Structures are given as structure tokens and as C-alpha cells.
Image (cartoon, rainbow, N blue to C red; front, side, top):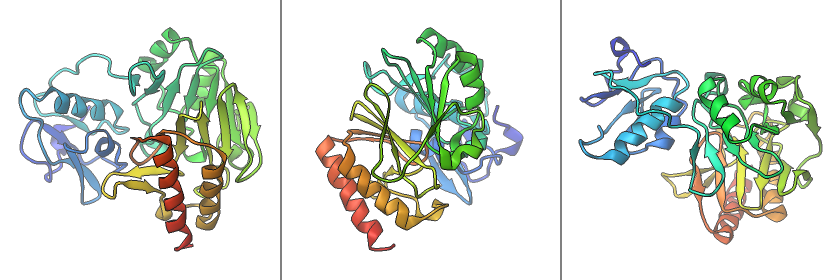
Length: 294
């Protein structure tokens, strides 16, 4: 629970607040950008949900339940509105934001996908029965797909609970020694994990970074690719490129050639839904900008 005695003084007056345990992961700002904003190395409430604005109130609750440090709450300790996650990104998609981000992965988002051949968990939230039970109701987990070493979190516990196979690239394997399946290769290589589920190595953010594309519709990009709301374009994080910016540029260029998708669902950064052709053009434009600064 958020701690009122640690309320950040930069919050606007009102019921909702962030406390100073916030690690500035940005998760709340991606979920509810009208309510939360950065300030002095933390996130704070910059606009209180108005009375009767159910969408804004729900956004604040979604952010609170996703927050990895439980730093978001209300001064009047109002009760949470029941189970909010897993939350389907759009009705009928079978793709769910799972919330409950982990501090060990710096608040990265994780995703759950229902599939006839076996469900997927892409990256891992923190362990909680509040997710394990609905995962079980949805058919369990057949594969845990790890995009890179930073966002492993409690993947081992979910894999053990559901008897799932765990996939990670061999170059990041030290972060998940419990992995059952190792991906290999570099930019331009691809591995089909299950029908319609393809792993594309994208070395750059880390040496073993991978994006997973499902049905050439959904791209789960870890920390290799995201959307920027302020700029209205695709982006990559040069300041958080632990392996090689040049390699990441080459990887994303190869990804643009190898596949297409219309949903971009990252670990960090904003998610976006665009027509596949527009997404492709945006990815090529990003690669051009990256190459100019390599």
C-alpha cells in the first residue's frame, strides 16, 4: 500500500498521490498519462481524476495495481475496485496486460496470450496468486518467453506452477539458469516456438535481446522498441543500450524486413496499435534516425 507519511510534496492536492518510494519506472505514466508525470526522479500525480470521471479513476487504479513499489494510493484509503488484471488489451484479442510489475525488472510490463496450442507468458510480473489463479482459469501457461535478461523477475515460479517451458536467448541465459529452451542466432535469424509464435533475436539492448511476434499481429518487444507519446513515433532507448547501439540499429532493420505487426507491446515505454503498413514505415524511419547517430 502507498504510505501517506511518504507522500511526495510534488503531487497536486487531492486524494490520489505517489509516495517517495517510487523508482521512476514510468509504468503509471504509460497507463494513465493524464494523471501521472515525472518530477525530480519520481512519478507524481499532476491531475486528480475528476468526480464522475470513471475512466480516469480506473486508470489510476490500474496504475496503482501495476506499480512495482506499491507507491500509488489515496489519502482516504478507498478500497480497490476488485480484480483489475489480467486485462485484455482489446476484447477478443486474447492478449492481456498482467499488471503487478516487478521492482527487479524496474517496473517492466509483462503479457499473457491465450493460444489453442498453449498459452504464453511474455516476460514476468512479480509472483502473486492474484495472477496465478486467473492464469489457471484461462488454461495455464505452456511457454514463458523472456525478451532479455532484465525482465526475468519471477518467471521461475510461474513456470514451476504451470509446468511451462522457459525460453531465453543463450547470450542472456545466465539471468535464467532454469530455462528449458535456449534461442540462438542474431539479427535476421528466427525461430518458430509454436504455430504463429516466432522469436526474432535483436541484439542491442542486451546481447541476448529477443522480440516475439505472434500471428504477425502482436510484437512483444521487451526493451528493444517502444512508442513515444511525446514525439508520436517509434523509439529505442539509447541511454539504456547495454550492449551496442549499432547492433540494435542493425537488429531493428532486420526485424522490419523479416516480419510485420500492428500492435507493439513493450516492457518499457508506451504501447501502440497502428495499421501494419504504418508500423513498418515507422520502424524504417526509426532505423534511419538511429543509423544517423550510430
